[in-house]
Amino acid sequence: MGGQSPKAVILSCSDSRVVPEILFDQWIGEIFVVMVAGNVACDPMVIQSLEYAVGQLNVPLLLVLGHTHCGAVALTETCMADESLDGGALVEEIASGFDADDDHIVANVKRQVKMLPVRSEIIANAMGDDNLAVIGAMYDLETGKVRLLQI
Image 1 (cartoon, rainbow, N blue to C red):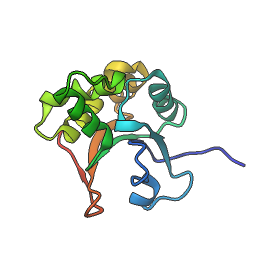
Image 2 (image 1 turned 90 degrees about the vertical axis):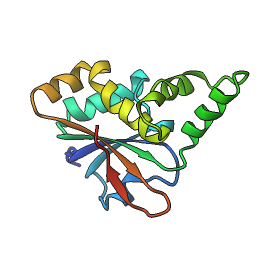
Image 3 (image 1 turned 45 degrees about the horizontal axis):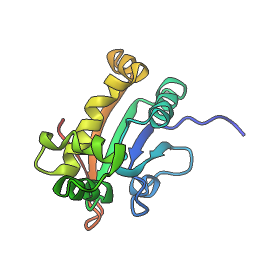
Image 4 (image 1 turned 60 degrees about the vertical axis):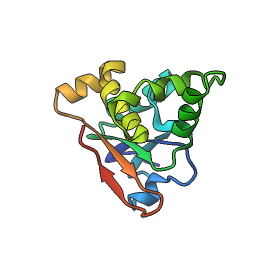
C-alpha cells in the first residue's frame, strides 16, 4: 500500500468523545492524529510524533484541539485547590498555562500552541519557513461545533 499524505496533524485530547476524523469529516489517511490526555505537547514521544507529521509527511497545518469538559483540566483545577493531591507532570503542564485565559481549557490550548515551536526545532523551522501554521481550536461537546481560537 502507498504512503500517507495527510493534509493536517491534530494534537487532540485522548477523551473518547473527541474523534477528530469524525469531527472534521475526514477519511482514513486524510489527517494525522496524535491523542494524549489534555492535548499536551511536553512529552518527547508526543513531540516526536508531531515532528514526524511535520518533517516527514510535510503537513501544512498543526491543530491543537481542546474540548469542553476536559477531565485533565478538571483534575488540574482539583489538584490546585487541594495541595495534598499530586497530579504529576500532566497537571503541572496544564496548570502552567492557567494565567493565560480565564477559561482554563482555552488557556491550555493556547499554551500548547505557543510552546510547540519552543519545544521542537523541526516545528519552529517549518513555521519560520512558512511551511506550517500552528493553530488552536475548541470543540464543544454539547453543540458539536469547533471554533478557532485567537492566539
